[in-house]
Length: 378
Image (cartoon, rainbow, N blue to C red; front, top):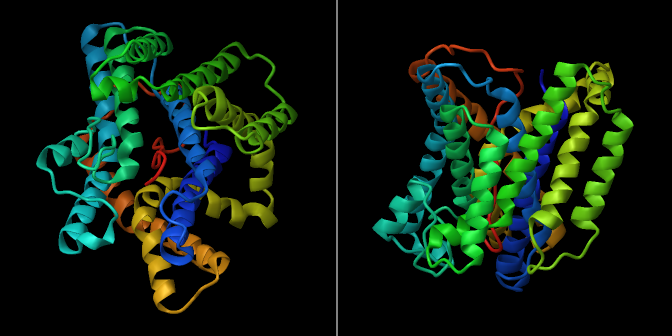
């Protein structure tokens, strides 16, 4: 089953992050308000990505095999599939940034060719950058450091035959407690954020969905999904959260409600998708959902580049320049997906993956998030 609503949510999440960085580029290059003036609520797209990631991992992976050898193969198959989807494109865009900034260092407000920092970035290890923040060379990659931890824990649960929801929750709580007690380790303090609970929330939604299907419980009505989505939007954008508020209790819960709403409204969306008038726009949004990872990575180059070019051409209206940048972000992300990400991923999957021993409990859409964005400032 393809979850049309989740595909559309992936596109929304990527664009929230992109709009955040577009507003920052406008502040830096057009209005002169500086790097610290931007629409910070766009970072909530990350929280949506994380909940979706937990849901997709929970619903697409098979039940634990009986023997240890089969469990090991399942876990390795899972990890390989995740790495194939993430590594090539992320490494490519990281390499592109290194090359561009080595050639023109003034393109970024802060950049340093530090070998240890670059190695940690490529290995998804949280590392203190030369400019004093826990950021990889490609700053939006900070979210992938969380994704990789989640993938590793999920694979470990598969290997051990342990409850995935329980193991992830236990380790995340342990890291949060360790960080709270004053750990000096950069990685522990980074991973000890409550944002990790958003993955657990996603897995919990997947568990609920699976139980409903298995026990043939009465499905949650789409009306409840609409209510959940509306509550999520109000909680995410209608409440003036501050940087000191707990991320899971603010944007995390809001993202969980939004994702749950998208899942429960799926019958309505399927009906719309079967209606001729809505087929093309929904198909376009589904494609952009597939392209969300490419949009997420490429927009950090496109958004400031378009704004700079617009300023050079004498365009001075922030709204018009922002809309132009958003359209270019969508175009570049779609081209990156169609010409780079999709063919590269298909080729690697075809060459490196062996047929599964066990089929997934329930097939669904492509499983990459994105996932994911820049923290406070890109």
